[in-house]
Amino acid sequence: MFELKVKTHFAGAHQLTMVGHKCENLHGHNWQVEVCVTGKELNSAGVLADFGDIKRAVRQVVDKELDHRFLNELPAFKDQQPTSERIAVYIAQKVQALLGESLDTSLTVSRVMAWESENSCATYIPDE
Image 1 (cartoon, rainbow, N blue to C red):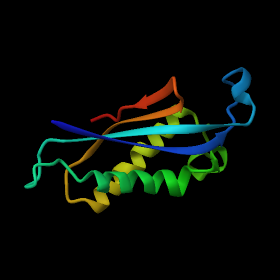
Image 2 (image 1 turned 90 degrees about the vertical axis):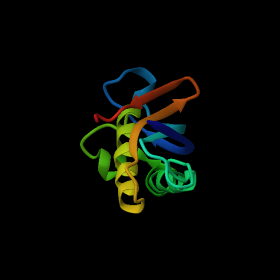
Image 3 (image 1 turned 135 degrees about the vertical axis):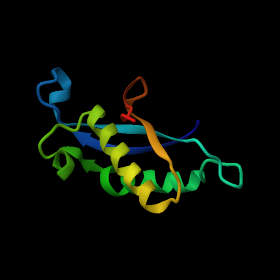
């Protein structure tokens, strides 16, 4: 099994209720996002996939859907709070769908880490 990881970032604001103290106020983060993909077979060039293809899928989700947004207002979070955990799930599902559409490969998103600060992150590991 091989695993590739790409990193990116975005700025976004959210407001979380019922989690305590400062998080209940509207606030923002400069999120760091790490997306890992796995696969079993290398292609004829000896790589699992082109990093550029993975980066494009991740940037499509992050840049077009999350960057410089009030996350509470996004349709994906209409009925649930945009916590770090749910942001990681959202990115994993969207990137998986994009990879499935654009690449002729068996890449699987294996984990997504959403860092809301340099020392706090949530990791989502999809079920196999």
